[in-house]
Image (cartoon, rainbow, N blue to C red):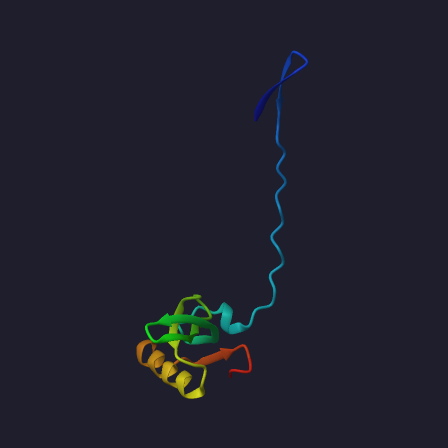
Length: 112
């Protein structure tokens, strides 16, 4: 409540709050709604290029984003380029660290 003075009379002004309805829940894929072990369903995307400067000049680098579909945990891998060999090497490191995922989902971009 806020106390105010109007024309010499004191009155209370109440703020009326309306409750917003929750937005409708869209139909999610089944692998997004089930609770599973971390990174059993992994989503993959690339970000970049990121420009960097070193002593000999400038260059480009890319980031491979590996996210867990159920917990939304993220693992980032720095890549020299976006070749298939580079991605396979980074995916191999990911599997060694986290275990082999049951399903890998990508955004179907040109890089894949």
